[in-house]
Length: 209
Image (cartoon, rainbow, N blue to C red; front, side, top):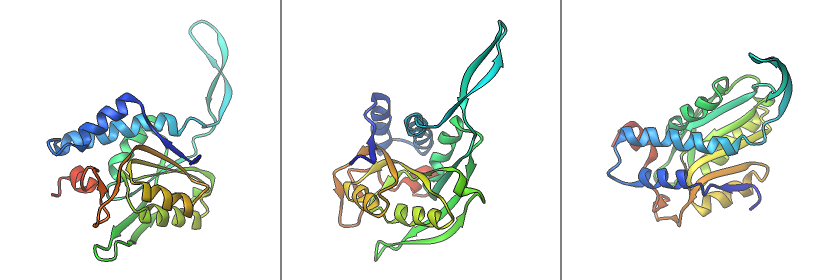
């Protein structure tokens, strides 16, 4: 799919393998999520527009390039998406941060929204939606739909691990969205968890299990 970018950088692959291991502590897990997100951010923001500005070095005045405007919003899907926010902000500290809260019904496996707070000028920003896992795609589809309902038009989705089913569903629901993944796994099990995956990302980030 043209809208899907899968990262094969050795550093990302190496860190994701450590992330998966049951022996990785909550502290290490949080740090790795931030580091991988930061590495992915380089590529995801490759198409940011530039403009020429005049600056003065210790030697002379010169014209150089800087990012045109700072209109970026990072929107984590709660709660696991919070673990990726700092990795984004390390590179784009001026970005606004919105939040969309989703929980999954354990019987129907359907997402339910319980919170949405976005920057008021979301329609003018590049919006990067972040969530460590893209399993069925339900939460991402609904979150992006919510952002579009508020006027968002320029949207990217960043995840660490995806299932083919989630990529297909999200691409079908929002074909205009670019999807960035560190890894694409085998698929989903009977409980709609990614296999081999890494378990529950929220629990591992916040130490709740």
